[in-house]
Amino acid sequence: MRFKLCALLIVMLLLVHIPAVSSEGSSLLSVTVLNDTIPALPGSTIVVPFSITNLGNETINNVTVYVTGPAQGFQYSVKVIRTPIEPGKSVNDTITVKVLNTEPGPYLLTLVARVGSVYASSKFVVRVRSVIDYTPSIVTDRKYVYGHGVNVTLRVYSTSNTVITGKIGYVIERNGVPLVNETLITFVRPDSFWIKRLSWKTLPVGNYTVLLWANLSGVYKSATASFEVYQRNLHYRVYFWDGAIHVRVYNSTGGVPGIPVEINGLKFTTGPDGTFTYAVPSPGLYNVVLNLDGRIAVVPVTVEKLSISTAQSGNVLTVRVTANNTPVPNVTVTVLGPASTAYGVTNASGEAVFNLTDIGYGTIVVRAQSDRYLPSETVIAVSRPSQTTTSNPSPTRTSSTTSTPSNTTFPVPTETSKATSTSPSHVGIILILAGLILAGTSYLAFAVPVIHEETLDRYYFLKVRAPKLRPLKNYRVERAVNAVEVRVTRGNAKLENGKLVWELDLEPGEEAYLQAVLG
Image (cartoon, rainbow, N blue to C red):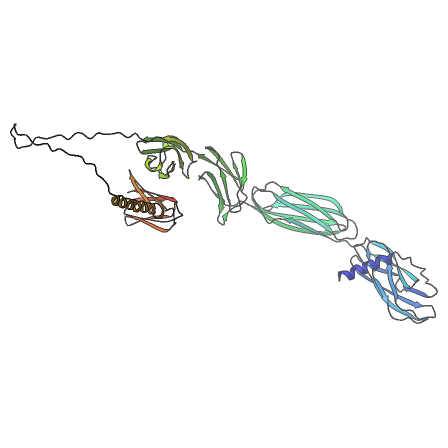
C-alpha cells in the first residue's frame, strides 16, 4: 500500500509540471469543468465534475485527467478514463481535490485532459471559506509533594485556517482563593500553539484549580484542571551500625525514595527502598539533615572508635577494649599469632583472655570489632615466658619412733652398674615398634581431626582442626558444658539441656573456633 501511494505521488508531481493547453481545447480533444466555482472548507474534499469531448475522427482511449494549481494548500489526484470515446462523442466524470488547512480566499485551479501528446484544459475556482477554531488545554500533574517544584503548562492550539486574535486569560485558585489572575491580548497562527509555562519551587499545602479561557476572533472557549499539594506523614530512623550511618525514611506504605539527605554538608537522596547508607571514614560527630516534604529533621550521630590495650602474664594474654576510656563488653576480639588464630568476646569489664600456648609467641595482631563502633587493630610482640628450673630436694631422713642402739650399724646396699648389650633380634623388634608408632602418629596427624579445648576464667574455648587428608562433613561435637552464650567461626552451635552441640563442615586442614560464656 505504501508503495502504491509513493508511485501515485511521483506521478502527481510529474503531472503538476506539465504545461496545460488552452481552455478551449485542441483540434482533437476538449475538456470542460461543469462547475466553474466550487466552495470548500479546510480539511474537506471537493468533487470536480467535468466533460471530455472527442473532436477528432478516430476513437480515443485511456484519457488521463488531473488537476494543477497552487503547490501548497491542496492535495491533487489523477484519474484515467478507460472508456473509449468515439468521434463527436463526450464522456462525463468527476475528480477529487483535498483541501488542506488553507487560508480563506479564491484559488484558481486547472483541469487537464491528456491523450498521448494532445492536451486540453479548463480552469475553475475553489473558494475556501474562513474557519475559526482552536483548543485550549492545561498540562499538570494531579499531585505534588510539598517542598517540591510545581509546573503548569497552558496551551491554545489553533485549527483555524487564518490568524485568530483576541484575549487569553488564566486564573489559579487555592482552596477557592485566587492566587494568579492574568489577561493578555495576543494572536495565534494556523496550526500553531500559544504556550504559557508557569512554575513554582514550592506551593503551600492545599487544593488548586486552574482556569484557562480565550476569546479569539469572536469564539470563546475554556479549560480547567486541578492539582493538590500535600505533605506526607513521613517517619525516619537514623543510626550507626557496622561501620556506616544508616538512614531509612518510610510511611504507611513502605520506604519513601527521593528524600534529600545531607551528612556534614554532603548531599544524597534515599534509594528506591527509602534507605541510604553512608560509610563512615573516621570517628566524630555527624549531623544528618533530612528534608521530609519541607519538614527539616536534624539528627546528630556520634561515631566512636574502639581502643585496644594488652597485658601478658606468663602464657596468658589479656586484651582490654575501651571507647572513650570506658570498657566495652560484647566486642569480638581476634588474635592472629604465628601458630594459630584465636577468637574471643569481651566481658563486662571489656576484657578477653587468650592462651598464648596455642596462639604462639612473637609478633601478634590484635583486632577488635563491634557493630556499634569503628573497628581497631594493633600489633604487639609477646615473648615466651622463661622456664624456672627447680632442683629436687634431697630426701630428708626422719627418725623412727623405735629407738635403736647407737652401736648398731645398717648395711648400706651398693648398686653395681652393668653394661646392657642388645642382641640383633632386639634391634629388629625396636625398629618394628618405632615404625608402628610413626604410622600411628602419622595417621593421627593426617586422617583424624584434632580437637583442643580449654577453660579460662568464665570462658570455654574449643578448637577443631580438620585432618589434612580428608574434609569433615556434618561433623558434630557434643560437650556437657553449662553455658549461657556461645559463638563460633564456622557452622552452627546451640545450647540445649545443659549440653553444647556444635555442627560444622571443614575442608582438609581448616580450623574452626568456638567460645562459650559459662553460666
